[in-house]
Amino acid sequence: MATWVLLQGLLLLLLPMPTPAPCSTYTYAECIKHETFVPGSWLAGEGVDVTTLQRSGAFPVSTEHYLRPDGTCTLCRNVLQDNALQRLPLALVHWRPQPSVCERKLTRAKISSVEEVARDAASNIQNDWKVGLDVTPTPAINAQVTVAGSHSKATNFAAQKTHQDRYSFSKDEVAC
Image (cartoon, rainbow, N blue to C red; front, top):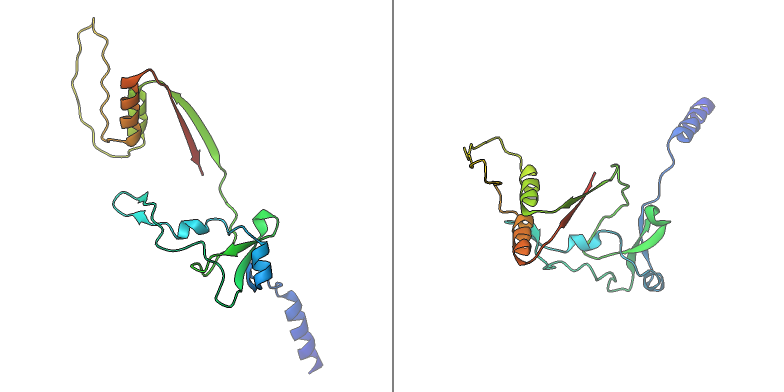
């Protein structure tokens, strides 16, 4: 019998220690003290136009209300921001800090013509079709032809601006 109890005690010691939940209920006084909301909470409330996959700017779900009728709220401990306590909106039920597992890379490029903007926009389109143009200008004429299978916003913007004045464009990409 004693060996059985000893064995159970050793087994309990080998189990990992439980980690506390990042969110708990707090009193009104604590809720008022901590003014920041958990990161990304505003994303939960904003609508998206499913035809264009653009943010609609409409907020059908409120992400600003955090106090319950009894005056309590949910505060979450964010280990990625020095264990700061942050408000969890009532519209959200679960939240946890999740560190990024990717290595961020920043790429910058200076683009000086509409053709380069169009080429860059076209290079981001992945398709498996090709069309031959068979354009042969006379040797005395310097001509460039750029055809892209997209009416990208960047290309249209660049074309509009270069018709008004001389512009150069900057392209910044952040990738994981």
